[in-house]
Image (cartoon, rainbow, N blue to C red):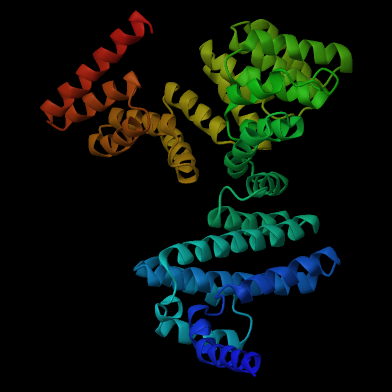
Length: 439
């Protein structure tokens, strides 16, 4: 009898306490997110890419919803709205859009029962799930060789969680394969910091640096590459990086070695000539560049480099002819357009020089040397106000260029702005003194 009474009391206690326990343990708000991620991973393992894509999109929707609600509950209205907008962008059906509208109307109440620690944990889960979803969607696009789209998705993953495993590496490789070399530099650099022994990653970053004009950094990465001596393309890239980072003697040795081992090559002869010209051996450079043109009459940069040599020697008509020959094959070469304008200005052909410089600046507004030369020509023609506009921009781009400061001082002087002119002349004198005294 007593045992039955005790069991009855226990059952009554359970009935009475059950609702209270349920109230203390609300459903997990992240359950739908976890379910979507689990379904996506299972589909991915099974090779069912379409199903995996749908599930990852569902995970993105749930993840952005949770982040929007978390931010709203913590008073971050702007970031909450942005997260709701991201959720709207991936909503798959009318039911999801309806749910989204309802949550937008009362975003705080959905997580009102959670503690700060619980909200933080939920936010971390949601952000990790968003990063994972974008990462795997991007990897699937990369495997389909859709590298540009892969890079877009992987950039989303990196924005959601820049430290998520494999995100920086995958983003860098996708951008590299999409030939977005400049954009690939940052993620490849971050990836290399975590895996410094990865030789292939170092080579990709070196190539990206070359395309970004960061030649010294490219040379440093390739210097100790164990495959460089046996791989002509790596050796060529290394020599090019040396030549473009003002190390012409080392570059010349690399290119001579390549020519000895692989025979005549127009492209190799060009970069050999450029290295020789850099260290002032114009005669040897001219021989190498002429050999390049004999091997391949339209080889890139041969005429341009010959033009630069002749410009330095004051042979203006010959320089002009070489620059025009380069532009006949490569009309969009901005550096050669600028060099041709330089030769024309020295020959007194200012009208064509101005047209060339304006076309250069239309394509590349931050080309400081073109700004300077255009300002100088305009000033010589008496157009001081127009010259100031160009020279002030050149000063902003290259504040330590003494020639810019001098021409700008002259332009200010022409306009009667004496105080500004004197400041520029003083800056010119200080820069010249600094250059004479050395580092």
